Image (cartoon, rainbow, N blue to C red; front, side, top):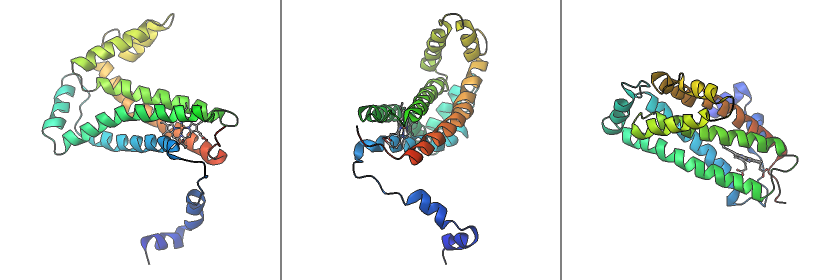
Length: 214
Ligand code: HEM
């Protein structure tokens, strides 16, 4: 008896799994429909490589740069794990944009899928948020000045600008609090919202099925 049979006998897994997995793929679905799934695969990869990076990364101005150098040059497989996290972050932006264009091209944002388009827009903004907050973490010159410019842009928003700038930086200047804030948003807040919105996105896809191209 397999482990699966043993568990199934006790937990009656078969009907639930069948409901989830025995789903015919519509005949009009082609390779263009793969980009949502590829984006999801990349997110899983980011979560796994990110957890490994967190074992050595230190979010403080005194240690962030050195800890990233240590990961890259000393830790076993560190260079590969960091490289995967870096390049997948770039590829995600490419695949999510192709996915969005596919949905738009096929008119899949129309009724009854408007709400899923809105959820998708939130997923897109979260993806950009990961990129922006992750960029600061190596705490090198490029990271520091890119974040100085990015937060200055937020600061130039009429009326609420100075509030947004202080919120992002944790004060008027870029420093230790900024780094901790960006780290916290990158590894806790954004992943939490990502999981919530992905769950909603997938729930709606299963309830509504994949659209026929208009
Ligand atoms: C984190 C990013 C995202 C992931 C992982 C994701 C994942 C998926 C997956 C797996 C599907 C099934 C069909 C397919 O892949 O084409 C899908 C469908 C859909 N996605 Fe996304 N998506 C993301 C972002 C977006 C964005 C940015 C939009 C639009 C602004 C969007 C709007 C939709 C809509 C409307 C559907 C239904 C399409 C249909 O029924 O033909 N998604 N998504």
